[in-house]
Image 1 (cartoon, rainbow, N blue to C red):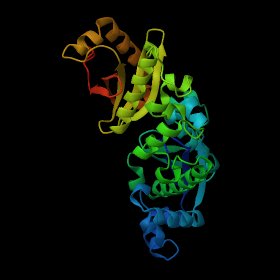
Image 2: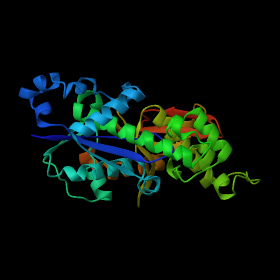
Image 3: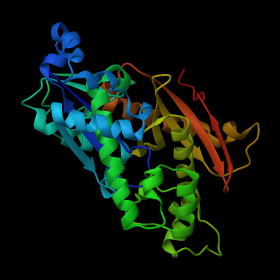
Length: 347
């Protein structure tokens, strides 16, 4: 069964597009009976070096990308920063993957996706309905090191996006996009602090220094009256998102609501294959009694019922995963703490 591999790049960036690539390698490379012999030929010898793009040098990625374009079927697509803001970064990356995959509906029957989520899972089909064009879909955690088709897609996507960021560097002098490619490096954050926002930066992925409603609303001026409860909560949620992303958690959605309650953040902890419902707190002294007083009985009931609604709606996407509740406390500009697996009486 011919398979198409797909991967994306840019999900962890503050600026620029999310780029996805889809690659179908020649049949003689994928056929188990022909693959060993085919890869020894000079034509396909380069495939021995195809690996996760993060493990390769810039020069090697450029070289391999050109060869992949020459010998395979390739499609590149993307989601723009405004689409990241509209849907959230995870949905936008899945949208980019779908766009890259559409031309292959008649060229492949199986889909290989890097990670643990398919762009055609029910979670994303609810938001962005679309027919599923493939007979079989397989998600592979660490797929860019396990599947040559996914690895090829990761290389192509990385090279394309790096070139795009180099062009943005010329369009927005001073941000050094050509250097950090939009990732949240200290140099990038320093440039944002100095220069402010530009249209290449998505609102939902801006660092706290740029996301602050006070600074955005007042054109860079600090408020004399201090942050409101809403503003303080917004800042705390953004800091919590950044903290969990830095710990390797994958963002699913924010502010999931129904009539009986709300959950601030939903993440995936890939190391534990666990869905994480996150309550963010921004008020009160953090001491030994913090969790007891912060999460009273009524609040715990609302969190539990809201989590049950989320699982009912999206259970098939996370059927093989456990779930837990975490709490992040963030106050001021630097104080932040993360509690894992808080007992809400659900165990």
